[in-house]
Length: 183
Image (cartoon, rainbow, N blue to C red):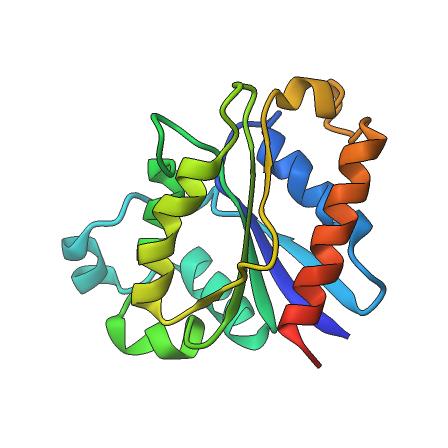
């Protein structure tokens, strides 16, 4: 069984990206266990705070989970044609101290998905993540692209996936991602 840590880049209770991540976990192949993690307890990054107090316990715990996993699945919103600040802040914390970067991210397969209520999808946010992932030494999967535009049509008010054609796309994405991760 391969373990994937999934992180949604939105803190909103009704987040479409959290819904997308839950759907991805449900539609993942049997050999893939998607564990959903939260960045809700991460403070804003502050080098002075890090120097005085070290890495916050919520950050350290997620770093350990990612380091022990087989892959990472990022569900990114798109804000102002890029990644959301709260999500970038989380990854900045996860890369502290710099000596831990190879342990946490080095050669780690990463899938990028995203959802937005707007018409443009999350292509620009996913593209904005690529230099960050490259810098961290992660291995983004380019075998398929998955982004949701008009997410209110794909998910109901409870965050359940209601579009069967999109469900098939998501299931195929997760199968391809599983193959990319390998054994």
